[in-house]
Image 1 (cartoon, rainbow, N blue to C red):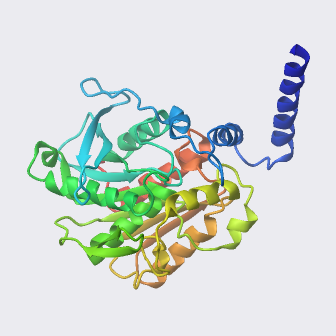
Image 2 (image 1 turned 60 degrees about the vertical axis):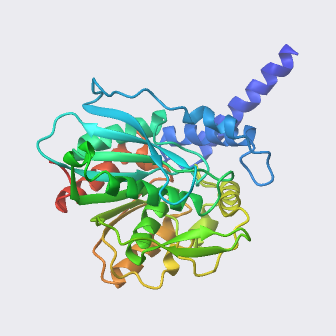
Image 3 (image 1 turned 45 degrees about the vertical axis):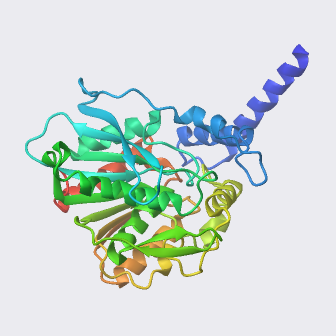
Length: 363
């Protein structure tokens, strides 16, 4: 028995050694380690096509971290809030507010939607909490991190509707104590990966004043919503996915942190039993009837990411529509932006610099 265990350990170590030795030397080691660990975790938790997916298993990495409501950590106060859905009965959404402890006057607001293929992740877990605290401090902005409902338990369009409810919560808080802290003329919607796509389709919903709704038959219809009281000044999209077939999706089918099997699982989980029109802009954001009227946009992509072509495509189409676009591609992989690594810091500084140039930081 001991010999079998020893041999198993040696096999794993040998595989890891080969993995790090023969894979791209330009990719940060931390990304490689996280990739190995995540592949094992997703396999154990059934997060693959045809797998027996376990929510309690993946939520091991999503446990909420401590909040700092009275004594700031890293110069930022944090507190958890509960948002009542504006469009769905008996639905509540968890969120976390990140507020810089030192500020003069009202601060810009960033509404943030995390990545995770619409299936995993939380703005309150260790990784996102640490990253968002730092980003709130660097931009001197208040950040509202939104934990929208996840697939496969809550497939499309539940997440889109929750993101709209988060925006409505901000609108409905205009006359509260919260409004005394934020400058409602300086609101950015931001997200990474799935969260970036959600941030963008929220902008489409507010522009067109419609929201997707799944009927009892599974068909997705578009319901009217009220004229928004607040405007989005900027959308900051980190490796967004327009859900189109691209060359990079094939080229990086075994890519770090987002391989083809995982993308297939995420897609199946998010789609669920919905019957979606091929031109639905909330599912296929590049199929919107027009790109005009979008706010200033920042798009950040990663060279070795299956989603890179899609993000670059979005940037080009928006530019051709006359939208002011900041776009930069970084030589890294999916997931790098929020990591405490050098190239992640460079990308975050680029985002901060853009927001500062647009007058959307508190500094």
